Image (cartoon, rainbow, N blue to C red; front, side):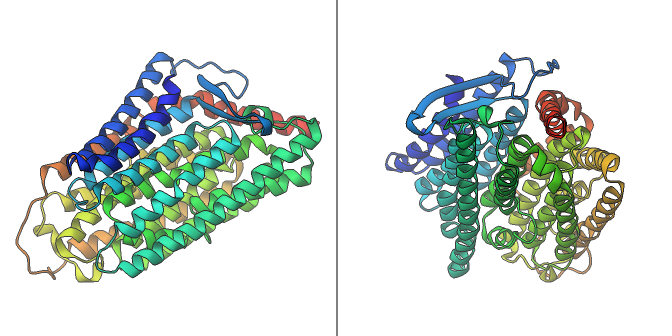
Length: 505
């Protein structure tokens, strides 16, 4: 019953938010916030019912909670959702960042609040569904549920001065996402029908599709389809074209939800599906994926350095960090996979904070062009110090979760691909250049704006402080996250290794 509430609560909250303005204009935001908090409380309740800190190494998959309800039985489709340690972590952080996004929207959204929070909660429902689906058709449905509401969030609630560009950015996002969905659906159907041809069992059940015999060439094609679909959503170069545009057009709340939460569904899916469903093909594809990751690291860092728009710079920095995550996933090293989990969470927190801070700067100066800024350190309280902290965190300063994630990934990759680890380290050094460059351009030098000294409000301050403490917690006590996700990550890697040995023997 608790598992079903993870879908029911945010889904119903979206409709309640839509109709509630008839009662009071402020009801939508309160309903949306209450829905996310209620979902988070359900996740915490599930977390404390199961001791995730005791290592119980069993055969993968070993779900701590699972709910299976017949859905379209004729085609072997079920409403099959389940949780393990990895899912729990992603759900907690997704809920936390979604609460932050709602708080950011509190004073930004003044018109059509009901429709805004309706779309926001549908996106949140889709994200939750992606993290707990154990049926491939159900996973695809949740993957696609996020598309239309996110389109409206980008098109209708972005920079009001240039509506045409808002729709162009939304259309680009729609085309990229629709391409991702079509590739994913085609790959899922090919996998299911190949499994049916081999076993005479028609099923979309994730547990049943693991390690079942299909043609090696078909497996490789399906694996490529899954990879391309997830690479578009991460995004990885050259599929990144949609991200800088929508990020530069979106409000702070939209940016937090897109870069902080939505993008992390793709690396999660690579961990959950590609490594387990297609071990042999993934192994043979590893060098290509790692090379792809190296290109993304350097390309993202170089383009970020050349940006004058602060939000586009943040978007390209995210592309660079996604390259590092891709390398960690395809290193097939357990330590690197643990680093991937830490890095996903830390990067989400860092980028979310930078999105909020850049939004506050834009609200005061009505520009994202860094060349029109300068000397703001003496004009604004709190924002410069927070910006410096998160810029340093973005380049992996010790004491933050980013340092732990990068260290685990690079040390794990070094055991398998030493040269790749060295190149990735050099790529990370470039991140220090654009991270410190943006601080120099915005906050130091002569003041280019004739403004009075001002404070940001308490709501904004406490939001950023919450992100600071969470990021420092990950940096000082990452073992808590590693303990919770240990069973999932260990068993995924163990299953991958056993599958390779079985195929070779």
